[in-house]
Length: 161
Image (cartoon, rainbow, N blue to C red; front, top):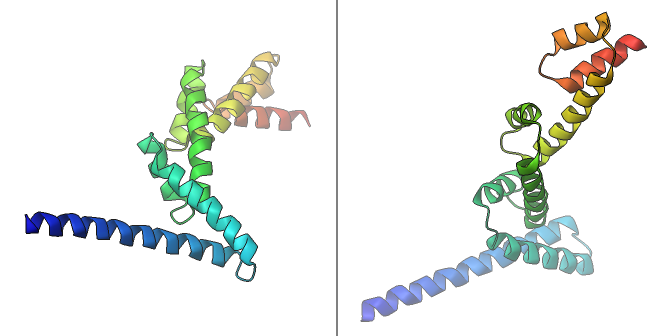
């Protein structure tokens, strides 16, 4: 029984130490950002603390790991990155053009936000190129960049200048 009490006490103590470590880390972030402004330090601390709590409860482990890897010491940026990627992941789950989606995923396998950006850019360029009349300039652009519609558009537009 005494051993169980010691284990429980040690566990609670380590949780307290961890919470103190987080508090200290959050204050360090705030002081680093605003070394001479106590009000801004408090603002940054509160923002970081809210973001830390938010990130502690997120559901998508893949997105959480990505956000933590991108911003290991900034919980507010982790939250921003997580939310941006969560929205983009939902978007990418609903896109229709499988060819363009494969391109975007290949370019940015872990970053849904960049996948979305790339998908939108490629899809728009694909539509643009499909509207252009057949010509040697168009054929050349497609031959140079068979899988990259944005580069096809760039090369094609440059040839028209």
